[in-house]
Image (cartoon, rainbow, N blue to C red; front, top):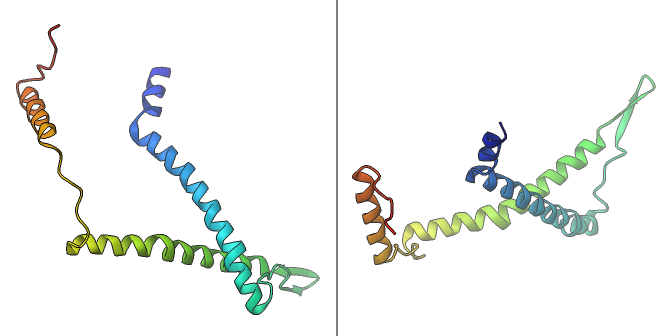
Length: 134
């Protein structure tokens, strides 16, 4: 039971996913700070503090607050714009340059690596005779 769990956890894609989640959380913190402090500060300087938390109305003695939703929506749009203009747009431009040939493609493997891959493939074709004699 524990052996199967260990194999599951140690698979490359699970570890990669865990790393991606941690990096994503750290990146989210950076983007959040940028959106709140920098972009929010610019908006506050131009048009006042962008905080609608208390916006709402009363119906039959009950208060319906929509301001927090509006603030969250504005925050989401700021974060989405920051990610688009700082990450997605430059990556798309880089991919377009590579497609046009302006950016060099990654180099092909060295000749010795190709030779080792060919030897590996030949051994695999023989039926897996890869044991070493010492």
